Image 1 (cartoon, rainbow, N blue to C red):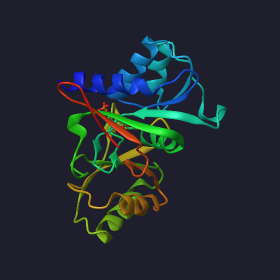
Image 2 (image 1 turned 135 degrees about the vertical axis):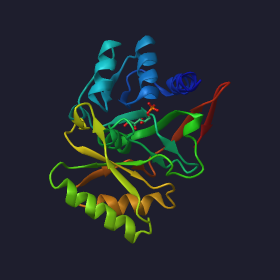
Image 3 (image 1 turned 120 degrees about the vertical axis):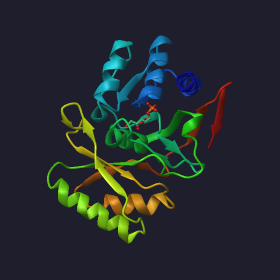
Image 4 (image 1 turned 180 degrees about the vertical axis):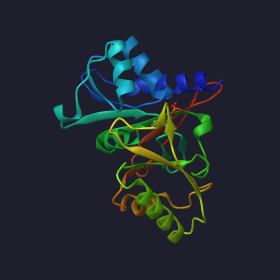
Length: 226
Ligand code: 5RP
């Protein structure tokens, strides 16, 4: 079952935690397993959550939290992913926490991805790419995204403004998310760079060059990849 695999990956990541560390805590169901296990083992350190949801869970299991502005160093960040390719490039943001997750992953000394082995893909892109955008001029930003994608050779992909309860989904930072069905992403880094150049784009769910270790939960254990 995928939830058991997520739990196995989360449990394996605990081996990288040391007392006194400052941790980045990811968001989503796999990261939630990690947070619960960390709380259960009585973590002696401090942590920065990447979402309000993770903050609530971490507090509930007794993890001491700080804000990002209370530290200059994050020793280790542990987070889930929607897709991970063999180079460690990721699609993230299925849970809508991509901006905070990316800031923390990028600043962490070590970034570990935990996921069930269904997230281990040869090529990114089957999972729709989340792109966080400002609410201001969202229509113009979507138009600019379309033009950028066309210039990169992505023929007429479907772009959907994500919906949540009672309207459009809003991130913890008050932004919106456009999910882009690309089918396949040939080169993640230039795509990320081109989309991020658009002023109304806050960030994309492409995490390139950030991953130090991937831990995939399998039927019988875990598989690690760097
Ligand atoms: C949230 C994320 C999650 O890490 C990603 O969606 C994976 O979630 P899950 O562990 O529930 O499969 O990027 O923004």
